[in-house]
Amino acid sequence: SAEDLVKRMTDRLAAAQTFSFSTQEKHQRLRAQGVKEVAFSREFLVKRPAGMAFKATGGERGQATGAYDGKGLTLVWPDQKAYAKVNMPPTIDASLDRLAKRFNMPLPVGDLLYSSAYEGLITPHTKGRYMGREKVGAVECDHAAFTHERVEWELWVAVRGDPTPCRMTITTKSPSGSLTSDVLFTNWNLSATAAADAFETKVPESFERIRV
Image 1 (cartoon, rainbow, N blue to C red):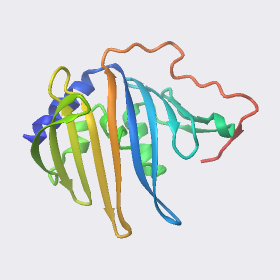
Image 2 (cartoon, rainbow, N blue to C red):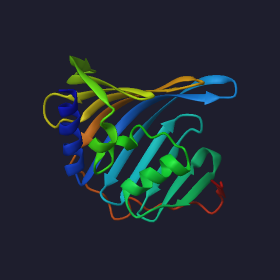
Image 3 (tube, rainbow, N blue to C red):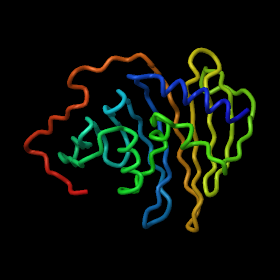
Image 4 (cartoon, rainbow, N blue to C red):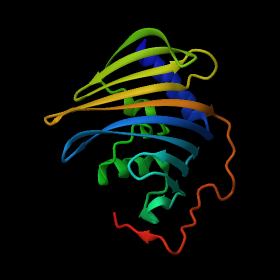
């Protein structure tokens, strides 16, 4: 079933203690002049329960890096010579909750990083159906589609090897219209290693701090 597919995927990701992956992302954002599509790519490194780092290229602000070390989240925009620093709870799970609620940051990739991601994705109100097998790039995938209140989302999971996500789309409906995020996943390594300083951020003294 569609739910079984999500369970297999989330169980495997939850079992990975240190892992890395890459994304190519397209997000529709609501701006004063209407809907704008923002595209960028990211490389992620995650170490449970309290380490996460990413490097982004493209997007509205050019290159960006982010690191969470169990105490705070630091974001750096080298092109703008700017950075932001926010205190965070001591786990990835609690920090993702805080980002979503306090800062209203939609995190479609973050949904997969929870230690109990299944409970966040599948609720008693979620309706899912299995759509069959399709290729995402060169990878054969099982495809499932879900509806949940004001959200529709689809998931493509690799058939062979580890059941890792290959693509995820999320459409959020609101009175002002629908906004879609489309994320392609590649380069999964579920037994990655993290350097001792992988989640530390050294910000040059000349950079200006942005208050968030």
